Image 1: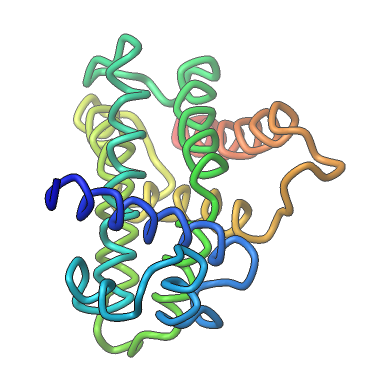
Image 2 (image 1 turned 180 degrees about the horizontal axis):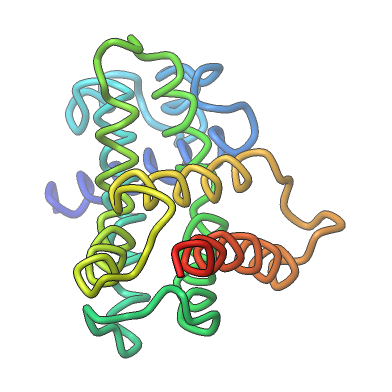
Length: 201
């Protein structure tokens, strides 16, 4: 029973944090706000997390699991050609769906990184880590002589940053439906990838 109660408390804290991050943002949410919303004593928080940043890491792990599940649900070979619009759209669509489904975590992660010491390099590590799959596909193209706008790691990070900031800035349920956003991002990125190839030819 103790393990069950502990698991329930942890789940309640995570769910309360998601709701508060969506409403107030990461920086404006205190640990006491989270425990109050979860209906738990403040001390219970520290039985599960060292601080708010560790709680965010737990939420981020859930987001990464969701992204992996999306990829595992479909055919995802390493030789995807991101200059093919349909394949590029599949990647953009999956990334956008995960970001929107886990928008409170995206908000918290973005605000946490911005508040961190710029010299720490944390933002770059987070961005390159989250765009590793895109980088692998761009590596595949470069290794086969395809021209890219820049180094695969940088191009993948730029693509990821565009999606992440737009997801952070764009309120859900507004005048821009998800399909339209995904098509717009796909066309913008596709045009950039193809234009470099044309210029190189």
